[in-house]
Amino acid sequence: MADVILFQPKTSKGSAKELLSRAPVGLLFVAAPLVKNNYKVKIIDQETDIYWLDELNKELNDSTICVGVSSRTGRQISEGLKFSKIVKDRYNIPIVWGGRTPKHVARTNNHEQFN
Image (cartoon, rainbow, N blue to C red; front, side, top):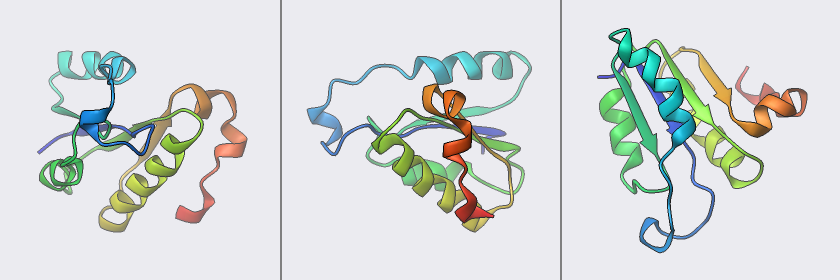
């Protein structure tokens, strides 16, 4: 069970085997100081893990402090919103969005449907 869950949404409709994936470097950067301070961090990369929902179910619990979503424009936003809804439907924990798009166009990324 994780203290913090970091989620990398997929960018395309293809299966994980069809895609050339890269390590979620941004999430690794966020996770490093948390791990250094003894938090248990789980990174879920939807691009490469077809069983990502099973991983979420295994790690998410009432002691999870927060969940982070990395995102860019496009499909990652819609996949991140789906992920956020799954989390919010189960637990009332903070969901923190980051990445290029949320950082630069925060006002247009206001996800009021979850309030």
